[in-house]
Length: 399
Image (tube, rainbow, N blue to C red):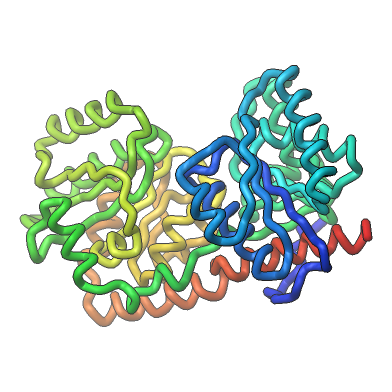
């Protein structure tokens, strides 16, 4: 049975009068889940609805409020059954007090509390399944299953949709594949001024003429930083590239020991700080991508979507990604980038060598194809429109 992609066209319609949407997640900080929450909140407000978010505090609370959303501080991250029961009652009270029309859960622990609340109030329930969560036993499978229990279940890729169907036999009529979105206004090469790129070059100690391999990913093992470091070493053994620099952008989120481990590994391969630059969190990823010659995603575990490679495509940059998870949906191998086996530094080095061998004309052709693909398949506007259509669909059934 095919998985529904409905609605197939992006739509821009108002929400029913009086609509109030409540999104729940652990915290309103940085990350793909949080970004999607903000984008949908802004879309709800633009469509004439109220956008509520319940979570622990985070760096993006003020941004939510600037978008017109309303924030309710709640600690929803606990897996303790008693805490979940109490949070469910608190959410049910919030639903009644604020006249919530629909609840959208974006993470597992908050989803369990939200599920209890909607059962108490009869409120429509939407879940977004963001990742192929590990399942190492029946208890973990049960815990994960809440993300497939919504009246509508949004999968962020066809890969994730297949995971849901395989694990939970979720009916196709409940599933909606809605890819994560790229802000095409922010990720527009023409919108990035040279001053922004120069600021990053200065911050990262890059010389003019540097050939930059960019890896934008938080510092966790599953992102494959060590694989890229080994690939850079392989590339430099095969090709003389005195100006090659690999910049790894991403906060370690307290994993200082892992950062030091990577630095020591790079040094053991003869790569010093001028070759492998460990940058912290970057607030200007569009400028970083425009500065790069190639953007790499070396994840050793399947990604649910991989928004950074879609953003790089929108910037017209060559992309190299590992050939699992949703990456094959985002990268048109041989046209907009390269797909390589996960964990294979040699294959990644060969792909990098192919990128640096492209002529200016070939790079321009790749950029045109990549930008077209990103704008037509992965825009945040399309993501928001299709999500709101899911809301309208459920609200029309409940009145």
